[in-house]
Amino acid sequence: MAIKIRLARGGSKKRPFYRIVAADSRMPRDGRFIEKLGTYNPLLPKDSEERVKMDLERVQYWLGEGAQVTDRVARMLEAAGVREKAERNNPKKGTPGKKAQERAEEKAAKAAEAAEAE
Picture 1: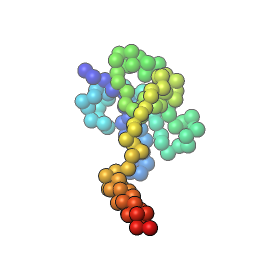
Picture 2: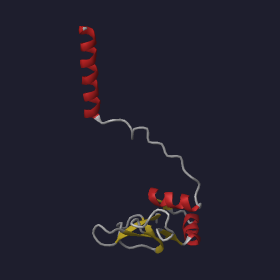
Picture 3: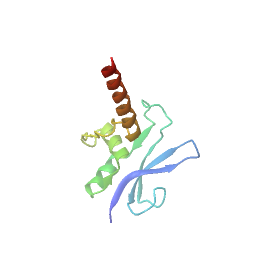
Picture 4: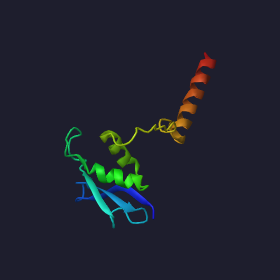
């Protein structure tokens, strides 16, 4: 059974509230979970201690059992000092899309034509 430590959404519309849970990876996001490990309230200020609460001993236990963490929970664990900070590299994130590249090429071509005409 593959265990994941992930967020399960609660709260009403436009008012998110998340539980940090250990769950079977085959279960739905907000469905059945094995154990509640903490809470995350994104509406609170970033410096608030109430924003992220975790039972770090239980998180360590599940990590020892081979549980995988999602990216968002991994970032929370890095901030808490439980995990090593992972190197994240997405070189394609900053590159423009196809249409923007085409517009840039057209603009460069027009500029080159205007330079040749002078």
